[in-house]
Image 1 (cartoon, rainbow, N blue to C red):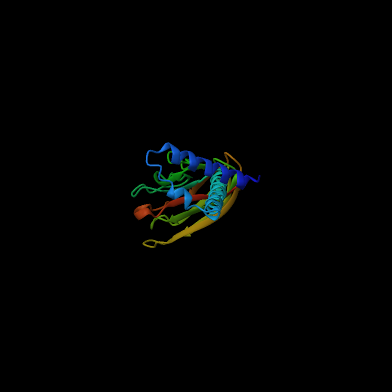
Image 2: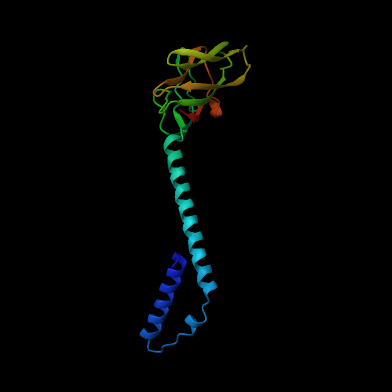
Length: 199
């Protein structure tokens, strides 16, 4: 006897037992069932089992991806009125987003929680009386890129610079004001980063 046949036999036996165990002994519902009805029901149960297995596999894959590709995103700015004067680190004290807790608003330093490829941007708006203003993007004390602004009195110039960096775990990235002064009003000074791909 095939597995399907065994299931049909068992189903019929249960129907028979159910009829004799009820006081009304109304078995018309069982007599109206056909072989095809039972087979269709079994096929649908098999399809549900397959779908449930696929869903469980997909949920496992999603959980695995979340383990290996963490979300690391930060966006911070210098508070209005706290105009940095160089030289020294620029401390972006107002945190807008810090998913992954890689950025430290007390020091202005981002420390990579995991190794990977990161995308950073930073901006500069020099003070109108600062003349020669320069900021560098630093990685472990190495200058990687910079923004340079030379202004005459009553002039203003805003600029931003992107950078894609390969970082090891615990590598540090920050923005250093080499000379001059920067204006922080209206969120002009920003520092952002996001993990693009984990190693």
